[in-house]
Amino acid sequence: MTKNVIQQRVEWAREGKFPQVIGRMPSGWLIVADTQPVQGYCQLLSDPIVPSLNDLQGQERMQYLADCVTVGDALLKATGAARINYETWCNQEPSLHTHIVPRYLTEADSVKTKPVCVGYAGISARPFDVEQDTAFMEEMRKLLNIQP
Image 1 (cartoon, helix red, strand yellow):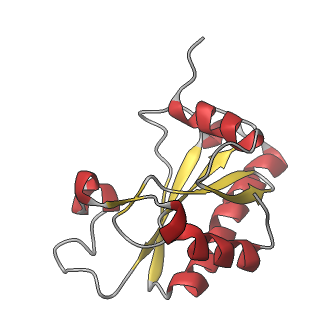
Image 2 (tube, one colour; image 1 turned 90 degrees about the horizontal axis):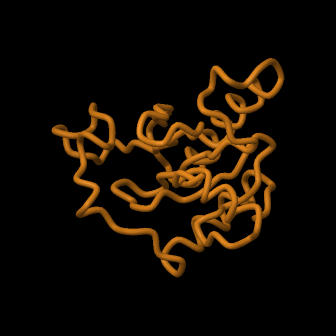
């Protein structure tokens, strides 16, 4: 069976082979997004892998949601963002993952009220770069008390 991109990334994270991993949260893997249309754009990948949030039950569901908000709190501190957007779609890749996106007062009026995937052209966004993103990743690890 072919793995989707989320499943593959969780496997790489488990094996320590995914450079975008910030660290292991109780409910999954926190990673830096592939592109950075806004600084600090992250994703939380559920581990265990499930198709959607509704497939988690009880404490696992509560933990995943709590981890999302905990990451958001850390992003507010690390980035100075004005607010955090949380997007859990699982449409293209039916494996639970949430986009956790800092939003800034300095964003242009034409994009600041839109989801990042609508307001920004992903193709022109800065790609993840180990050298450029290491300081941010270390700050997030410190704030969250996590390790890759």
